[in-house]
Length: 201
Image (tube, rainbow, N blue to C red):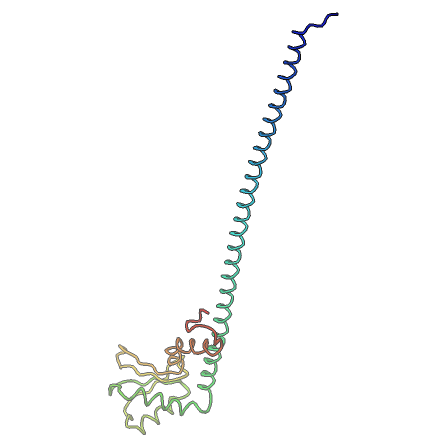
């Protein structure tokens, strides 16, 4: 068989073109793969960044919630302890009102109440101390005033006009209630020295 130079040349050119085409296709495939890999890496980086950001936000929210809950527990504990202290003060005042020392305290409360009172008042006293109040009034120039027992009144005295339009009370419990806010602050300050004055610390 004779060699055909033209056929050989064409075969060689086709082989070269095929190689060039395969090389170009291979290079293009490599570029596409590289681009896909870069986009995948970028997407993974962005996703990781977003997840890390969300985790950080969740951690911050959890920390804030825990701190708020701890703060509320602290405030509740301080409030509970302060309430217990103030309740013990009220109990001590009630015990004092039932003690043998109370008539002397009652004299001071009565003297304070009578200082600026009108001349025609009715004196209201604890049932157990009506006679004591009568004796005190007689010895201090108020013998003509009526003294009545007032149910529920145990730790002080009161005066009212005969028509019952006004009443002034001077009792240990009423005096305590007037000072309760200041006493609460003082108790918080002594019990919890690191707290601020409002008890928020």
